[in-house]
Image (cartoon, rainbow, N blue to C red; front, side, top):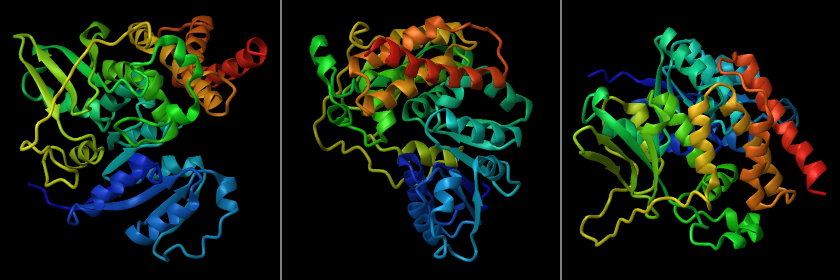
Length: 390
């Protein structure tokens, strides 16, 4: 077995996934090295991480934040790079073995693309890369002999469970969802949900955007689209089930009726470590299930009226083309507007549908087209809020 050190570039190192990734690297016994760290604007934490991990370089993607910060405490062995072009540069660096793509939102696509273009292994935590440009990203990976390894707990679970059989034997996959904090709310109560309430996730500790997506179940809609491209499945082969305990992270049903599930406590360090150490398994920094304690695991079908985002995700996965870019851009803008108090919680999904249905669909777009439509969708959300919600 190859025990050489793997150089890791962590894109989004100051976010939730990035910080967990650095914990995994610290616990790797020297098998993994944080070679490059990139963040948007949290320069203080980025320097702290640099002082601890001594990377070859760090990237501050926001030039204004970088210009305003005093970098005098940066270790002399670490080079500072600034701007979004630098993120792509470190992702493609010849010395990098694995790129952890953990920049939130469609902004993460650029780093993912650069890494795949350079033939890297990408540990993909940025689901938006596949939501916005799924067929383009997977085609590029195949052309450059690059590898996409899932970091999302659900897709990591599917990836692990699929190894119990041959690809052609898979009947369908079942993605689990906690249901978020509002799964038992009366529907009329959803109009009164505040940002503070929506940011209280019952099982996971995540950033604000992902937490709101978990409350609307838009995160699961995006995961349906991601799974469609990541595993080359028909949309009809992807199901969702509500599982409040977040212990079963997803399941694969095979043609003979056997269902293989991956179980573990809800801790992102496990799927991160699996992606970084694959195909090997290592002693984990994440906690284990305690089989000496009683536990209950429950499952229920989702209420598609309450969680209309799921139906939207299925439709977009079926449509392909430009639909994913528009849905993603509209959702990111709608979530931001909700957090700013400009949009009601129950209006997030309807505004996404409105924008999606109003765009000029193209079944085979270029990368430039999907990026342009992502920007257009954000502008449409702002226009709709200004014109229709006064």
